[in-house]
Length: 297
Image 1 (cartoon, rainbow, N blue to C red):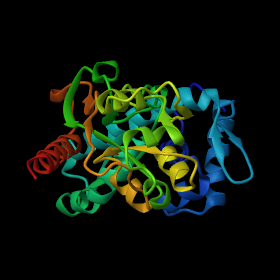
Image 2: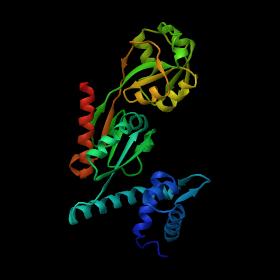
Image 3: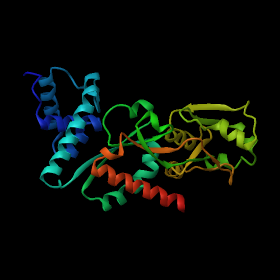
Image 4: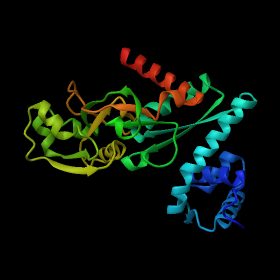
């Protein structure tokens, strides 16, 4: 087939779902299709384009370089078509909204509030994806992104959403043996490499010299809490985003009463407020209202 011709819209819808979920089975469930049918549609698109879009593994699929380059254009086109159809021919039964968030915020804040949003906006289908590294937020399409740190690197417009408070946490048996700040240094300290505020910031506020500290470096607070739950060391809670992870990992504060403000915040990022689609505007208003209510508690 001639690759210059526009591919079938159905192929593109299937490709977008499979690329976003990195699974033919999950895409099939979302689209109410069978997994073999999804695979067939993807193969037809690849044949049409003359290049593979996925590498197939036993239990997962991964985008090729060509697939990663193609995905943002496909997502943007589908969203534009959906919005235009709703605007010209009446409101669609369900509008799709794409939100990408830092993993710990999605897990600890958005997931518990997801039901509240869907009950308030039953006509909006929220597609929530997560990232951790900076590169995760610089590729693919999203109406809105929730990032941690400097917002200007990810979008022209942004709203402050949530601050963080740090304190050491560990398994109860480990925490019971920590009665003074210096006792922390007898254990490995799990440090999240991507955060400006970490153990050195805590040491400064505890007036503690950290030359004897032994650090275990990880790339996310989720990983830090899991390692602490397994007894690998002491992690830093980053409340309130980490509250769910800390609670479900069975971790407790090591120095009850000690809290220190972090140095960075979560931000809602987008290209321009005037260009936000109606579902994105609704989500922005809802999230900012929820976070304002949390701060007032």
